[in-house]
Image 1 (spheres, helix red, strand yellow):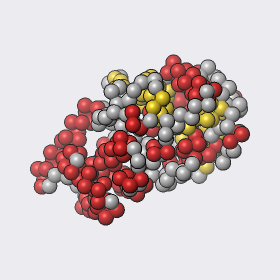
Image 2 (cartoon, one colour; image 1 turned 90 degrees about the vertical axis):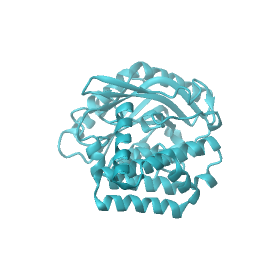
Image 3 (cartoon, helix red, strand yellow; image 1 turned 180 degrees about the vertical axis):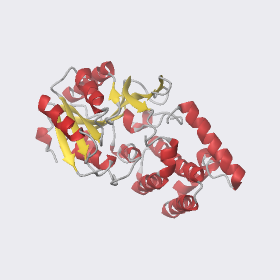
Image 4 (cartoon, one colour; image 1 turned 90 degrees about the horizontal axis):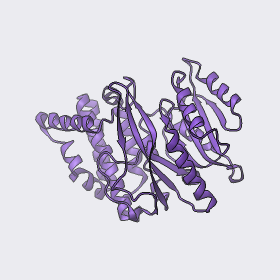
Length: 350
């Protein structure tokens, strides 16, 4: 682990790469050009055991061109979460942000983020979490969908969890919107399982109670590419990987007894709703799959939540999402799936 004296950068960007040769250049260039090649910016490219293209060579070439900015980690394939942890281990920035290799950042928004972070560091103001907007970039129809936090968060103000408002279904704090203080992530760790998709939900959930001071910077920073058929958020892919969503949800469930361990009522309500959403996702996709083993695994997850924490189970099972995603009978299942697909079409998250 990098010691505190070596944290001489403002921010480290972790870029997990797995056979990413086709698009990783755009991601890296967006950070370099957007920051004007600032010397206080640090990039950690993690080659997660790529074998099918020249990702390892490209990563080394980038590091050779910008040795003061870019570091490279080569490792055996461990999956997205393990790559994030590897980047975090090497981070030399006071702040840390993950940018997936097929995504990119907006240059002007990045400049505003850097100015903001530099101000916190200069003022010795330990803001633990900076939140920015992100944009779904849909390649199929060349349309954009901006996810912002208007009305849920006060803008451009240092705050605590007691200052937050209500988050609607499209406003959850996902990995794309989060820039953590590096020490917050390292203190306590992040329970990322290997070879598992959807671990960004763990990253966006488990560290939150460690964050005491927050700041919402209202800029459209992160550009989230949507369009490849093999993307993890594609419905067909999610059905095939329902076991991994269940695995991630189980880790989130066991991270806290929320009503006993999270003191902030507003943060607790947010985290309860996030867990409810994850339970609902497992329920919907087990029904879309319609395989007995998937439905049984999801039912077992609900039973496990009931045994682990009855108050959390009660909130999840009686919530609106819990109700409409676990409707009995075949007609109820069709209605649940129909409601999910209507929401997906409206929010355009896959």
